[in-house]
Image (cartoon, rainbow, N blue to C red; front, top):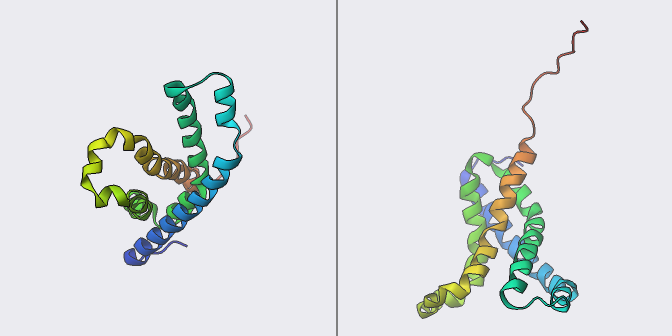
Length: 150
């Protein structure tokens, strides 16, 4: 699926990003309903900052794993321009999730409350894509040379 036409690749990256955001939202609905982790943390006495300090990395790891299909597709477009494709893929989801903040600039003054969610929206796909880029690229193509018995 290596496309060499930049506009088509940009359009595909935007479609991958939109589909990824939609499927991620659906997945998190089920994860939020059925995960036992918050209950376990609360039963062990974690509250406030310590609760979120444990839950946030777990959610980041889950989000990173859920980004694997989109990261793989983005890496297959044209890896030399991966950052461009990541920006285009993240744009639809980020604009959708923060459309109310963008419509009312006064909400930006409360950026501390928005920062964890914004990081969760922006970090997992690039992180997964960088890992996936190494996996998709694989080892260098070198001819296999037989070992000489000495």
